[in-house]
Image 1 (cartoon, rainbow, N blue to C red):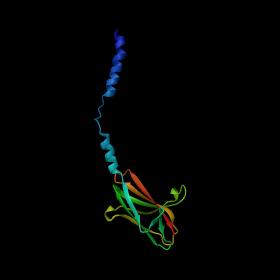
Image 2: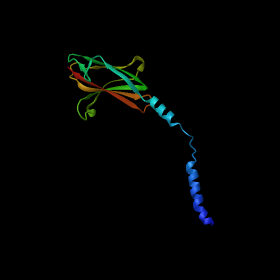
Image 3: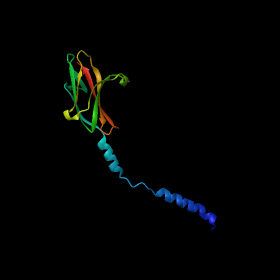
Image 4: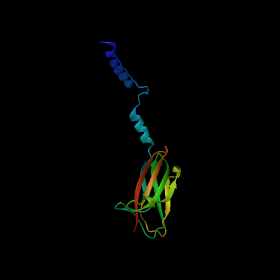
Amino acid sequence: MTNRAYLPLLLLLFLLLTACASEVPAENHDTEVMLRNEALPIITNVKTNFPKKEGWIIVPTDSTELNVTVEATNAETLLFWAVPTGTETWGERELIGYDTNEDDGWKITWDIAGKSVHHHVIVQALGSDGKTITDETLNITNE
């Protein structure tokens, strides 16, 4: 074979070797996923001061306050939104409270005196990593 015939083979061999060689050290992707999951905010429990019936929190019409308490981990702030029921109503949401102090428990009290409620209460847990968010929905209605 002539020198010209070896040139494409040498070029191919060089490309293969450089593609296989990596300067980035091997990473354990399982560890990376586990660390990411540990940083995710997790809402484990949401309670109110009223009973639940068939998926709805039943609020008597003469009630003045709705207390919402949340158990959450890896959260820095909890936001509490009231969103009217229906389709595409997120734009009509109202921030009814927030909590940044986990030490006394995650909770708010919503003043519902004189209000007719048929809403979704969305609890959003903002992650301590500043990037992640988790939410939980409660259905609230008057009886």
